[in-house]
Image (cartoon, rainbow, N blue to C red; front, side, top):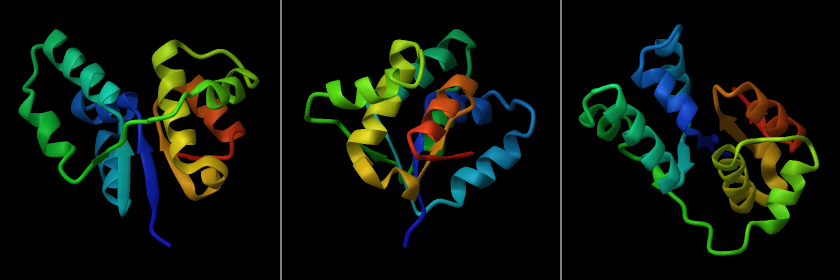
Length: 131
């Protein structure tokens, strides 16, 4: 079985901003066979790079091979599941809902890559492996 991960913006920004242990984060990301995210992640990361006056090309290099998903169904049910476990900001909830939309009941077979503590707690409660 291939190793699947959903990539949240916080995880990628940890690498791009070279936060503590960023090299370990990068190795962890590279260990997955299949990595997905939404274009919301791209917008969040590019915005943060612009805010910090960093190169946009760094983003492009890190997302080579990333598969972009676009949930084409309503996310009401996944969002309900998320908020049954606690509060998240809208974008954080959207990322988790998109991951749930993709993997459904197979959350245990997918790792949710995030540096956001509350998002990771809820991802774990939903059955995802977390970094």
